[in-house]
Every structure is written in structure tokens, then in C-alpha cells.
Amino acid sequence: MNEKEIIEKTKKPITKKSLVNDLKQLNLKGEVVIVHSALSKLGWVCGGAVALIEALQEAVTEEGTLIMPAHSSDFSEPKYWGNPPVPKEWYQTIRDEMPAYRPEVTPTRGLGVTPEIFRKFPNVVRSDHPCLSFAAWGKEAEAITADHKLDYALGENSPLAKIYRRKGKILLIGVRHESNTSLHLAEYRAEHEIKIKIFGSSILKGGKNIWTKYQDIEFNDDLFPAIGKEYESEYKYSTAKIGLTEAKLFDQQEMVDFAVDWLEKLEK
Image (cartoon, rainbow, N blue to C red; front, top):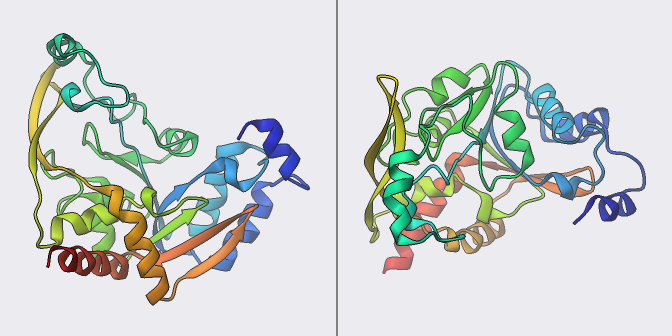
């Protein structure tokens, strides 16, 4: 949707003030919340992503913690690239020449404008995983992003698991469950068939860019819409109109546990 179409759909400007009022319906104060959003679905927002981020911060407050994925999928093993792929003869050059991941510099990819701007906000910290990092602001930001291991990046040593242990929330604003990163945690925990792959990224070591290999599972987010739909049919969750779109707030522990059971039943 282009800006002209967004303006035509919006009866009056969406502002930071109106977003704060909308978000108050969800009682986010003091919560640990991972947010996935589609800015264009809100309508025409005065101040764009900056207004949305500031509204979320005001809703959560410094006593809570606001988290967003900050993934940089193009800083990864080139042989797995598919959108678009690159020629095989380029692989080694990419490995040798790829700039090292640096939290303050490396851009996000494929997540939209809001996470990209959020990672650069004052007092936002970002985890050290070169491909699957998270950015966070608030009381638990340092703890949630610290010590993000290379191997199994969305598993038990990940920010997702730390959100789980803190009884955090998942907030979807104008997006569906295919964007719900927390469901990857269930992929690690479920007793089902998984494939382990070797990945790689450029890491800064001793002032040099070093291509470093690590292990992780092959993710399958194709199942997430079905998991989310069934969860919503069985469990209670909160909703609110945010701008022109619907927001849904879920209990992360409950949803991840449900997804673990769902994946295990699928294997039987």
C-alpha cells in the first residue's frame, strides 16, 4: 500500500497521542512485551515509526521492557539465500568480504521500518547474534539481550526464552502469526523431527572480520498461521483497535506451550 492509498483510508491523522490512548486498552504498563507490527496498517501516522515506538514506550513505561526482532538475514551463510539466491561461485567471496556484524551498525532486513528505527533509539540495546538479534528497551533490556549464543539462536539461550521466563507478552499490531517469532522457541522444545544445519556469519574478532560457523535448526514458519489460528480458537487473549488496525496481545508462555503440544501431535 503506497502513501496515497494510506491517506485515502485514514479519516484523520493517527498521532502519538491517539496511539497511546489506543494502547492503554491493553494495559501494557510494566509488562515485558515483544512487538511485531506493520506500520502501514495503522493508517497515516504523524511521525511514522518514531511516533509508534514512542507510544509503545509510553504504554510499557521504563518499568516494563519493549522488545523487537532485529534480524539481519543477509549477514548469513550465502548458500542458503533464496530471495534472491546468488551464484555458487560468489559464496566464498561473500564469506571472505562480508563486513562483520556490529550491533550499532548492521541494519535489519525484512522486518519493516519500525524495528530498524527502534534499534537506533536512545537506550535501546541489541543482542550480539549476527543474524538473529533482538533489540530491547526498558528495565530488563540488558538482561534479555545479554549473552546471545551463536548456536541455536532462538532456543533456550535466546532472548525469546528470557521473555518466556519473565512471563512476557506477544503483541501483534496489524500482522498475523507468520510474524510471531516466539513460535520458533516451540520448534526447539517440541519432541519432533528437526534438521540441524551449519550456518555462518562474519564476526569481529581482534579487530578482524572472521567468518564463523555455528549450528541451528532448519526453521519451518509455514506452520505458524495454523498454530496461531487454533490457539486463538481455544484461548482468551486481549484485542484493541490501534489506529485503523487490530492489535492482539497474547501470553507468550501459554502460546509457546500450546505450540509445543501442537507440533508434537503433528508428528503422531
